[in-house]
Structure formats: structure tokens, C-alpha cells
Amino acid sequence: MKISDAAEAVGAPARMLRYYEQQGLIEASRSSNGYRDYTDEQVEHARHVRALVEAGLSTRMIKIVLDIEAPEPGPRESPAGRAAAEELARELRVVENRIVCLQKSREAVTDYLLRSEHADLLDMAHV
Image (cartoon, rainbow, N blue to C red; front, side):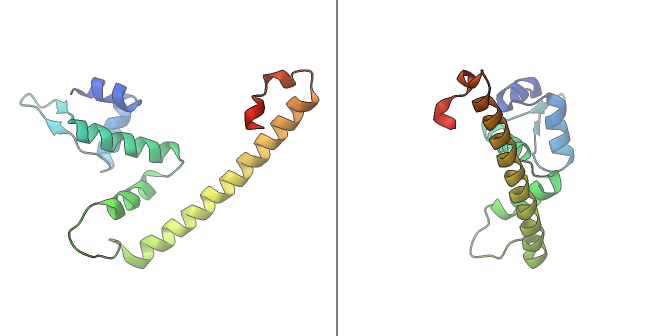
């Protein structure tokens, strides 16, 4: 499929797919006229990359994750070994801190709405 169709399927602008390709996170086939042509598998991979971006990972961290996830025959250690694992551990701490901050924000907003005349706006199943 063409980049515009792939972008729609992924839920990202076409320029974002080009950026992911520049960063080595995704690949696109090329048609005879040189246009990008995405297979269903490539679109699914781009969706995975997009999900990692939306989860807050940097493109550098995504590259490490993708390298670790890449299928390789036989038993193996992660591609970059200890250094990659240490970097992922640091990123995990950043993500965990972000989660704590988001939980505090959610609690503050929920508390405000519960004490206001607009508590009906809360979906009580998620409080």
C-alpha cells in the first residue's frame, strides 16, 4: 500500500513514517517508480513502533527494543549486552517516575471534580 494508506492504517502522518524510516525503525519496499510501498507486515511493524512512541520511548530506546525483539535463530544475548540493558533500566526508571506523576495528576483532577458540582462528569467506574 502507498504511504498515505499506510499512514492512515498506522494512525500517524506520512511524514512520521518517513521519519521512522530515517531512524532505521521501519522499512518500506519501493515500487518501480521509487514510491514507498508498504506490506501488511510492514504496516503492523510501524503500528508497533507508533505504540512504543506513544508509550513515551525515545527513538533511540525503540531501536534497542526492536533489536532485542528481532527474531534470531538459536539462543542469544541481547544485541548490545549489558550496556543496552543498563540503558533500558534507566529508561524504565524514567517511565516509572512519569507514571507516578500521572497518577498524582489523575488523583488531583478526580478529587477536584468529586468536590465540585460537576462530579457527574466522572466515569465512576474509573474512580
